[in-house]
Image 1 (spheres, one colour):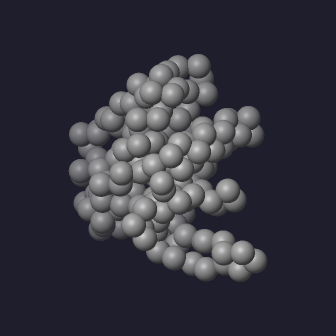
Image 2 (cartoon, one colour):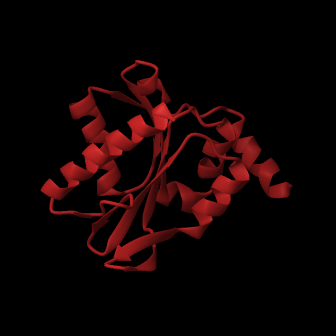
Length: 163
């Protein structure tokens, strides 16, 4: 619970920064809107790869407007993990060109272990996620390192498709 609340605090501070860029944010939901595109953030401790795949494919984002809600399609989604995600999650992103263009993954667990490090997968063109990385570097003095691709991951794609 403690790690998730720290991740929540990081995201809240980042959303405050987004307002200075003139980007629209929500106090109750975790999205940033730029040019009618929604960039969502999902905080999680752990998730099963099949659930991750289903949620990633869904692309839904809930927008509150007064007392009502509407559902929009998220252009980009960043997953913020408070615990190291299994390699299967990275494989889901690496194996799908569509996912890798729209989904970023940030392993924040080293930060919560006292290290100034975040492991990322981000092949999106989201300016919000680029700014999130800048925020981690400048405000939290965190080093961002790309996720190391395992040599067997490309083979895992073929196996996963056959299954």
